[in-house]
Image 1 (tube, rainbow, N blue to C red):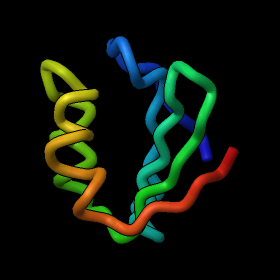
Image 2: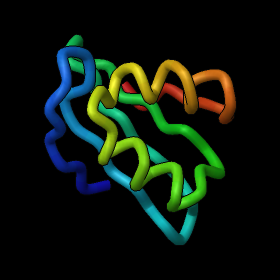
Image 3: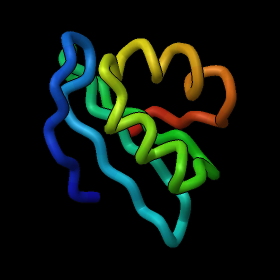
Image 4: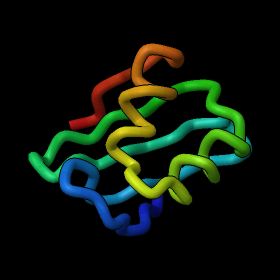
Length: 70
């Protein structure tokens, strides 16, 4: 999945597959995680957030099933 860089101290890049509703997040520590069944609206709010890391922690991490990619 293609990812784009974001301005964040914890998140390096973000990708989204609208067909499968998968949000992919690469962290600055090298870990890559996929969040499943994420609506496009949530993806746009995430990448538009003033603090993507804060948005991720508050709105995504505990709300969607997650799988580690690397």
